Length: 481
Image 1 (cartoon, rainbow, N blue to C red):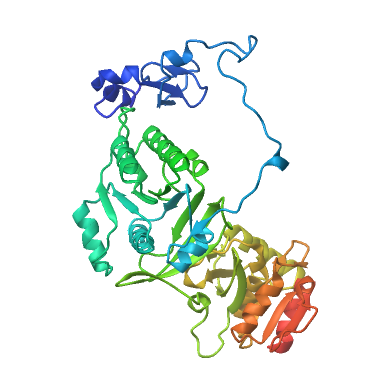
Image 2 (image 1 turned 60 degrees about the vertical axis):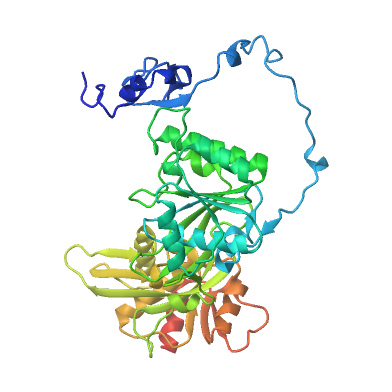
């Protein structure tokens, strides 16, 4: 017998054997070939793959009574349904209800949607439950009936947190339960407008014999809750655990199943938190909300650019301000670079930026601008813990590296953005006009941008240097520095 495939106490075979009623409700499906088995096996009897059988709900006996082959057709299984041309379907705007928390509404696309399903994930202790409890209280004050289902804490613990947040008089209904059937029955009886499930990994269904948190349980419970949301119009918010890498734990189908996926970002040791929309069927993707953790919970930050900008009284070498775009919001972020004499193997490290792209930019600097860093250690950081994935950060990264290498600071009030290609060209960034206007509004006076982003009309107080190639940008910086 292979190690790890015996009928131990924690194996699926042992759990199946301990529940004799499960054989009428469940079957085991192979993730590799799709074959099924009435009981758990370490090796799939169809394709021979190991550890691929996953517990699923089996069809009832009557459901497969009239099964026909494709050659015979499907008329005996179901009646054909009418179809409608797309042009004949009336498109209506989705009604939204603001949660009362402006930054959360921004990420959601304006507020919660009737019948929408939201999945929110983040590291333990980052503030998921705190934010949702605040949002539920705000929605209840607006007149919406709410239900907070807690599977990880008792009702007394939730009440204690609400008092710490200053919500002593909160009328949010709380249910401490992890059985899916009881949760659905409570939702049917109380008819709430918004329900929070904290968390989906703790919920289990009696239809399955596997333990809470398993792939089968998470997938099946999420499917039932999503179906209930769509049929009743209840907004369901699911809290999900994350893995060590920061991805949502559980089956990937969970993210496809819901309407909106939100991620909490930021260091638990910092006071600032970012909530980013990774998927949103009702709003912009990659929109972010910025919060500050206080004694009274999470508070929205009205001017998030102040978090990511330099606190230096005078300009310092290796610092360049970038105007990045997060969803629909232009943000000013300080890019810091440190170039130091390296050893035999020079190091390239980046925080908040793609390390592979950093290596590419250093090669472009060497080839097309004559700035050699082959024997130098290069460290790049995006201030404030923000993660920047758009290529418009290329020009600011290269200018900060050059500034650190030369030991000369860029002028005060200087910003830059633009994508850099391998041939040394500077490509335009989307919505360049909005970026420049945001920089001018915050008092910046000088910008180096792609030529295609240069405005036709001058922007008051902002001197713009339009460039087409990297060497042009470097020459401008040397001239003004």
